[in-house]
Length: 99
Image (cartoon, rainbow, N blue to C red; front, side, top):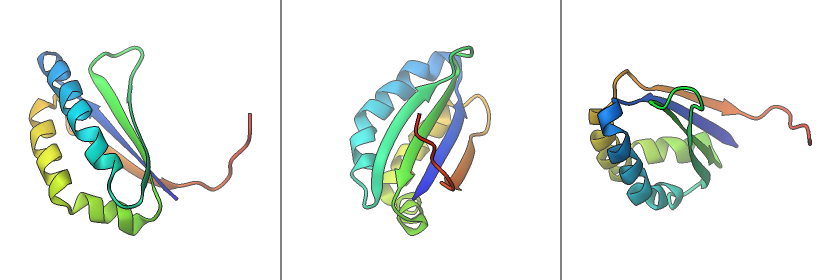
């Protein structure tokens, strides 16, 4: 299982546009082969910072998404709204502790 977290900082005037884009595109991303989870989160103290949290069956599934027309179309629109360069992190779970 691959977890992908992407941190994005938006220009204030583009936040609603980004949220609308995510609402329209989220089901396309979630429908990609190997995607088992997708969330949009925001920083509780900085209203310009958002994170996507997605889970992928394999790194190959994630990479296939990143090479897809779906990704290119969404990312091409999304990056116009950025106030800073996005940061992306891919991780594998080592240990889960039940709370």
